Structures are given as structure tokens and as C-alpha cells.
Image (cartoon, rainbow, N blue to C red):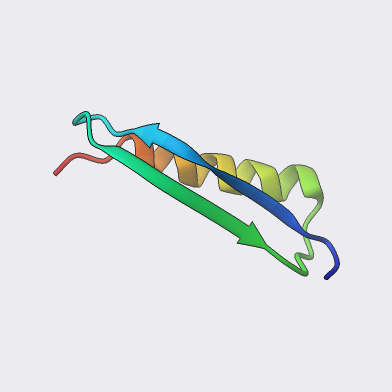
Length: 51
């Protein structure tokens, strides 16, 4: 594996629902900083979810 990044954890959505998540990225062509920004943004989107 090369150029790997990951973000995993638990979060509570805007409705109070608890979620477990994991983002794994392998072979990315972006900088590690940009890849981290994308996975951080994805986690923020999950946290803002409402049913």
C-alpha cells in the first residue's frame, strides 16, 4: 500500500443518532493534507445528517 490515509471513529448526528464510521484511502494522488480535508469534511457531513 502506498499513499494511505484513514479516519475512523464515532459521532453523533444532528438528530442525536450515534454512528460508527471509517474512511480508508489508498493510492491517493492528492497531498495527505488535502486527503485529510476530504475525509474530515465527509465526517462533518455525516454529523449534520437528520432523518
